[in-house]
Image (cartoon, rainbow over all chains, first blue to last red; front, side, top):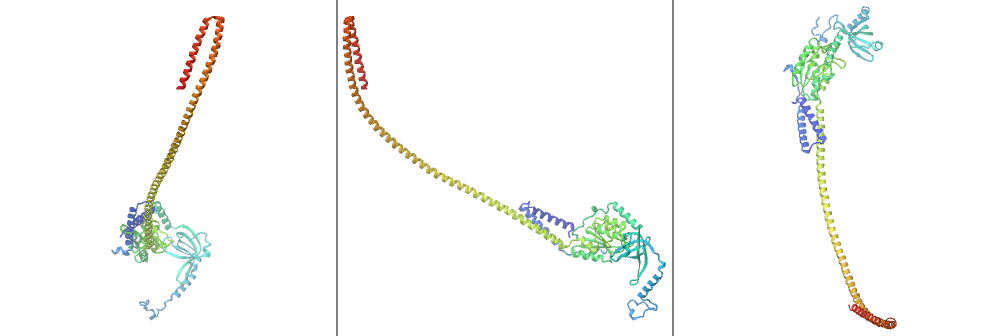
Length: 62
Length: 458
């Protein structure tokens, strides 16, 4: 399971990709690469966040 | 007296002899206290705590300055508004009060009619000194605060094993972030053993690399109940944590050093769970917004690039079209020029030919006329020459004859004159000399006549 930092890094990367595409200073092949990378991050994040396997664990009982 | 089953079978047995009802007991306590009113002091000294203001009055506790005993106090609003000083928790104070018993609840309290603060209590002074010391070390500075991770996979919880804080935190965390696991490290949260227990509970969570945030919680209580959360070892333990710590101790009005040194503070365990997590719905909303931005920006960018390509193609086509039109125009112009040149050439040639023909015709005519004129002139000249010849001949003959006549006459006259004169003045030699002269003159006349004739002949 990803730590918060991993999720934040992916969301930050998505933000960067969105800003880069919004600035429009990339050529079409690079834009397509960024779009595909963003789709991959979105898929991974949704897969990670949709998991509802959280639990409460008593560490003294471990 | 049989009281073994009095708790559950009281309806099946009579109460023991002499047993009082609660109401009777409280009424008796109230009567005794009223009778003993003179035995109680009018002024009581202690530390003010747990101050709660209401419209009708203010409840607070007066704690023994040396020990734990406390007594509840009530200052009705009419008295409270007459106080010269504000009631402040932690203050060492003297109150003017009467002992009051509330039979409905069996509570004894002081009805306060006046209040004088005497300064901070020794415990408060120690707390203030510790606060100053920790502040001097910079433990409360905002710059030290660690940010809480937004999407923790695991949070640690330090709280009482028996309290409701555990369930409150779990309910908030599991509802907001179902993927997040809560690791509970139970501790004693009140009393002398609390500090060591809390430190022992915090440290393993801080050393656990999977724990991203530690929640330190304790429900509400009196200042004394929460006092351990001001203990220096616990405060320093929290300050030393490399894992962000959220403290939720007591209620909103309670202030402890642990909360001051923690990275964030919550009012309740539930709020601590809220602070430590982000709702998965909010994350999905953010992701959806990012997805829309990426898709929109990508579509805009691709549309822009396609438009650029389209514009370039259109521009190229326009350039080609213009070049074709220019070429066509040049061809047309060349054709026009060729036609014009041809026409002009033909016209010019025709004009020149016409002109030449005309000029030739005119020249021929002129030549013919000239020839005719010349012929006429020749004829005239010939006529005139002939005429002149005739006339010259005639004139010459006339002139010569006339001249000869006149010369002859003059010669005759001269001769006669000479002869006369000779005969008269000189003699015969002179006559001879005049004859020679006459002969010469006659010779010259003949020669002149011959020359004129020769010229006419030519």
